[in-house]
Image (cartoon, rainbow, N blue to C red; front, side):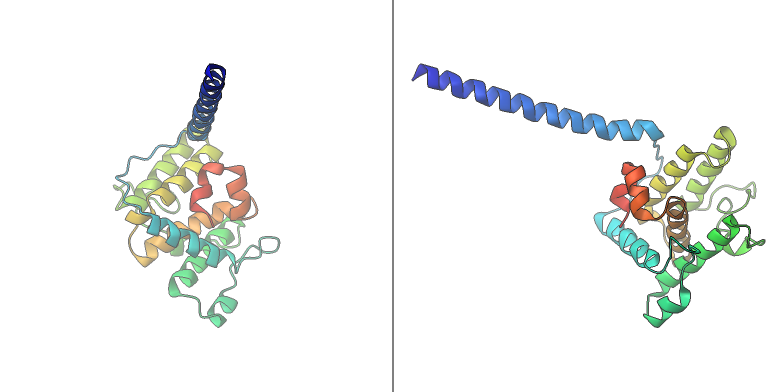
Length: 205
């Protein structure tokens, strides 16, 4: 009887140690992703699960009309034929402007300017809201680390997504969604983005 109790105790201890180790590894893994990209967010995040669900849904709807293996443009005509929401249409059109600018096919970027920092350069004024503040941080990150720096881009996408609940207004939300989709297009879509950068996966469709 004593041997059985002792054996049971040993088994329980081994199980508990295994559970603790697994939890510790998971925690280390999460922090490793965060430390790798130096994710920092100075906002008072108001984002709820419902906000994240809305973000993921809209990203998915916009991406459904983008041929990632072709011209990478949002198909406005098809989206309107399918009676997509104005939010999806506006985000898709803003995305098109960003992509065409990236491709050098659009010389004027005034249509995709937002606030004082989202767009080309800056206006030397304080950010007007949460989204504009993330654009400011992104611009300054480029100044310090070079244009197109991956860590700057990942921080930008992460901070837009994690603060999505405090990004108000159709125009601001359309810009935020378009910006995320533009970075996703660079790697082949949101699925590829989530695989390459797991820290962004919770915010992607």
